[in-house]
Image 1: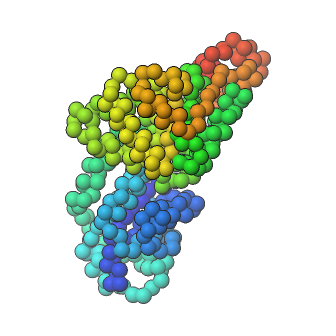
Image 2: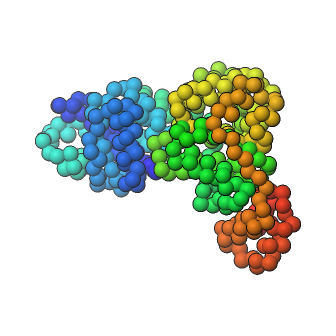
Image 3: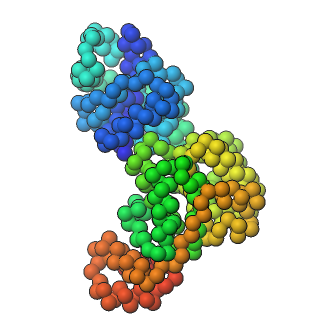
Length: 357
């Protein structure tokens, strides 16, 4: 996972439009970053090198970076990590660099660069117009994606006979987003773990593929966003945001009712993402064919992929859930008490978890 990044204009005589990207991330994330730059934008990049900085641990040079592609890279970087910055031409630093420029290898050049930056770091450059616009754009779109619950992971999900198939399907989607079941439609009663599994997919993708853009949104929030976007004249920004998502997680689609404009927008977003091979995951309290308040064209698209349900947990699974929850809460409860509670609370998992709070 990338925790901080910096994209800086870093030209040479041979490559006047070169940029240097420095990141703070795990070693296994570098291959994902290189693949993103090479495969998605067909860019010429250097091999990654270590940098002598407390803020970053890896660096990459990007050769001949066009402005349009640079903006897309910055947008994607901001979507996976908000702790980022952009530095364009800085005359004083460039002057120092030219004085010391030589044919040093890139790893030695990176060391020299750090020394040069220490000399010139006291110079405060005014924020560029481009960076200001990017930050404003980021602020405008920040509201459209809800955070994932850190507890909703595959590791914390208790698998039983009631959810084994759906758990396996969710894991398969997380491992190969857009290539296995698309869309994945999960349905079941209240408090049975639909949101947990959906968000577990998001956590898994963000961890294993940090350059992928994941967006989670309950459908009632999406309805509110569409209404607000229409009122403020920002509907195109809303469309652009969702069209650039790699994994879209929409919770409780049964609430996406009563507004033709909302269903119209989601219909087009769904089509765009599906045509691009991006993953869509949906949850509901009932299967698509029973969502009578939704348009036929939406219901039919919800059935394109895999439909999987979650049933009420068995007694054994309810006991396992209580044990798991007691361990998480560091609460010591006798097994006989857990068995008694599990035999009395049969409707959903939230009631079981509420016992230990």
